Length: 354
Image (cartoon, rainbow, N blue to C red):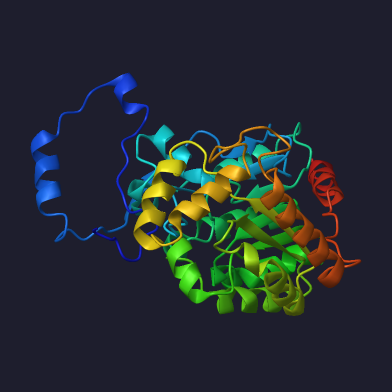
């Protein structure tokens, strides 16, 4: 079986929606691609786009945020389990290799953000960067869209949350410290394993585990609140590491911890199935069966309030371990509430100028 080293998904997947709009015939090119697949180098391409809006209102009651924004569509990190893969299909691409190799750059993100939050009708509420795709993925090193957005948040004294698994966030430590001075920032670092071997398979283009732990230490050293997300927990892949991950992140200085159970919604079920059969053939069937056992016999469960935690004996064991981890390593710790008053004061001060 052909493997795409350095990538998460191991397959191109047709867009579920393309046939609803039009048919594109590329028979000859598809034939050439299959004939020369082993010689073809899959390179990441970037395309600048100009969306009309950037802030998303979150309607799901179990996500834990009200607003999010994503400077990039698609994510080169290539995490095999990523729920955001499905969103790439709405842009006309596939959820497999397209998701991690065809990245859309939302060039006007900072301008759209500024236009929205400076409106008189806008009331400050934490906006989370990376509700869908990682705002510090490799493209950020070149395009600096996330940094531009942080400058807007600081200018308008507006609360912001960040979710990432990339140590590149430390590049913007100056802005993070300035935001934190006013109680306007919290950071969530995603940790899925302490094993580099597992990390390279699950998340091939992410920062190493040691870099992530060092990132937690550095942010915490500067007083910036850090939450850790053990997300997702996958039975028989990283479920046995829960207590060890909690201990390591607590020692690094994290203030709180959370988790989600893996759920393979939409096209991700097929992508994950293909991946695990190629990378973990010896335990593929066991892992798939245990995931299904957490979701009523399916790889996915879309029920609010249940989908993130799962149900059944395996899910109960994971949830019990998380409760134990919190009592043992995070007892009495929690993230501080972000300041929502500074933005209103800023707008009042600006109005007085007139």
